Image (tube, rainbow, N blue to C red):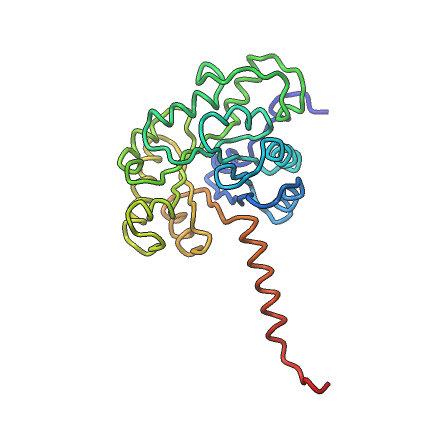
Length: 269
């Protein structure tokens, strides 16, 4: 059995980002079973994130999916409704947090305090964790390794956040900024106008701020526009949220139903 903590605890998303590679992610909103982790792995995703902000998934279900993802080598993240949920989902098996609607450096620092052990934050000890295969590892070693492995992503979903891109990206402990394209456009009164130049400008500004501070940028909300997602990756983004389990299922079902409806045949045969 592996004995070193580095052999046990791996964040494959952080590894790929360190190599400058592009990370693919799927969002879990519908499926309540651990099968979704294996499906994500078989499909070739690097990561999944359980969306507790926009779905009624429980802490128990979220933890089960995260632990299953850990076992198959898919990095499990959780988008939380707020700071209060951070420690519980991390203790339950998540290896990263997506923090929605962050508008200031102060709010970003609140998430760092909740997600990181001292000296970076205030996360409290919870004993052996699923990330460490429930092994008893000295706290100093375990806390440092978990701090390094736990990914913290904040979302820009308002013009207020975008105006403070530099100071938010500068916060120690933040690894990535993901732009919530739909909410950002809505905040501007431009809902659904993906071609509007302000969206491209927002990505350019965020990518520049993150490069300055050694952070990464994620593309969110563009599952219907892979052309734009690819454009923003070419600009420097390195994480792509590709869509939801519900969206994938419905698209595949719709295509198959259409396929059968369009079969040509002789009604007399």
